[in-house]
Length: 259
Ligand code: OOG
Ligand code: MG
Image (cartoon, rainbow, N blue to C red; front, side):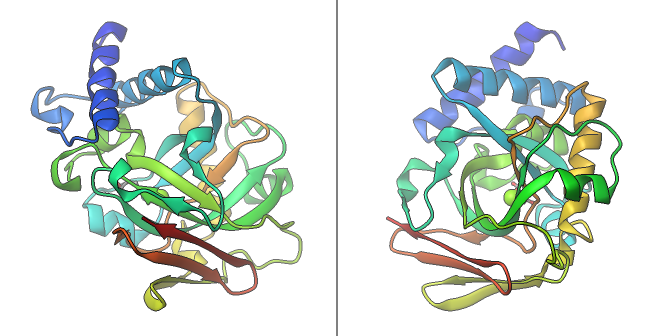
């Protein structure tokens, strides 16, 4: 696939997002879309957002838990790009109608203090992080019915990124990052619960995997990046009027309202 083709497919997804209108998955028209084509389309889509004044603030890992891979019927982790415009302040409000069919999921986020590149160990990942926080990701797919059936489709659509919210960051020292109990409630009712080892066995392993995926594309993880490690459970549908809270025992809480 040449870059003009990638840009054209990216523009189609970009317009669907801006118009808040679902569209057919790309593999319906381009059956042989490869993972590498898909990342090129994703990057072309990010360039459109940057041209509109957005800034890159980090990356997200997706499909790092078995629960998510089973929910979406997809086999391996993927990454997407986060921009400043995707961030909602903790305690803030999300307008559901700005998304097509948004869903929310419980995550752990890291703030990476120094650049990470290529094959790194869990210890190197831990040393590079200056903070960890409870987080929620609000996903939205630009595809009909939030279904895409293939990894290239979801990658091209920036791994279904829409919005995210971070709780308070704290230093990693002394925290058992793979032993957190994550509880996601909607309107006070517990909806999803899992231990943080559901995320790649250990949330920092998502960061290691991310560096590996980036290296394959000749990229590094820049200093200052926020990284969402991937959801610990399946995502919950989000509707106007919902109050969603994530409580992570030993780490903190974060909440948003949907309007
Ligand atoms: C893909 C994105 C998955 C996660 O945390 O696993 C993701 C999707 O489910 O549409 O963000
Ligand atoms: Mg996610």
